[in-house]
Amino acid sequence: MKTNISAEQALKIAKTYHKQYKIPGIIVNDISKSVVFYESIMDIDGFAWVVLSKLESGGFEGNDHFSLVISDRKSTVEYVLDHNGMSHAYHLDNYDDSMTDEEFEAYLKDDSDV
Image 1 (spheres, helix red, strand yellow):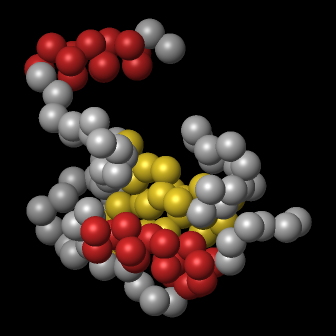
Image 2 (spheres, one colour; image 1 turned 90 degrees about the horizontal axis):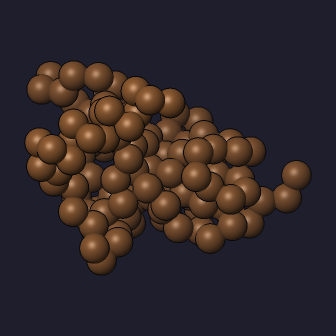
């Protein structure tokens, strides 16, 4: 299987994005502990790399990490999954991670209809 980027390159892309958008946590330099390759993953065309940003214990409920999802084809971070599994795209010009109560309730209702 031929990929466009290596695990080392995925780590570098993630670290740059992590710093630029102030993603919580720490990315460990050990690729075996922080980078995972997927042949297919949600909303990515082609292969993907997931780089984990480990959170310090405390304060957060849910997972103990943020996941930066990188498109192998585009060599860019497509989105970030936070500690609760919510998707964020900090790099989009129109990105706004705040939801009104009505928007959040509609989102939950749409999700439960599936």
